[in-house]
Image (cartoon, rainbow, N blue to C red; front, side, top):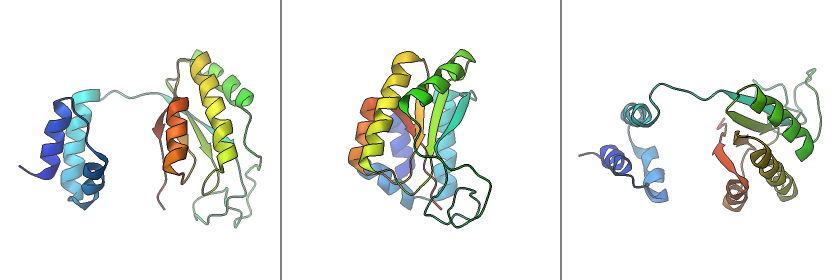
Length: 165
C-alpha cells in the first residue's frame, strides 16, 4: 500500500495526518495525489460547494511583481489604493453577504505579508464577523508566521488561501 493510500485510510478512520506526513505529500507523484485527494473530497463533500464572496481588505501598492496582478506597485493601473479596512467595515459587508445566503467570506489583502499589528486588527474583525454572522471566514494575507496563523485560527478563521507564484 502506498504512502498516499495509507494517509487516506487514516483519514477515513477519523484520524488526522501529522505535519510531517503533510510535508511528505509534496514528494508524492502529483497525478496520484490529485486522484486520491479527489476521492477523499467526494467521500466527505460529494460534489457540493460553498458560495463564497471575496472582499479586498487592503488594496494596492504591493511590493511584489506578479505580472497578472493590478495591485503591484510596479504596474500603473487604475486599481484603487487604500489601507486595511476596519473591523466595522468588514463586518458590515459580511452581514450583507450573510443576509444574501453566502456561506463563506474571504478577506484578501495586497502585499507579501501583513505585519503583526494588522494581523491583530484582522483577528478582531474575524471575531466580530463570526459573532454577528453565520459565515465561515477565509483569508489570503500572504506569507505569515505560524504564530500569526494560530492567532487567526483562534479568532475564527477556518480556511487560508495562499498564492504561490
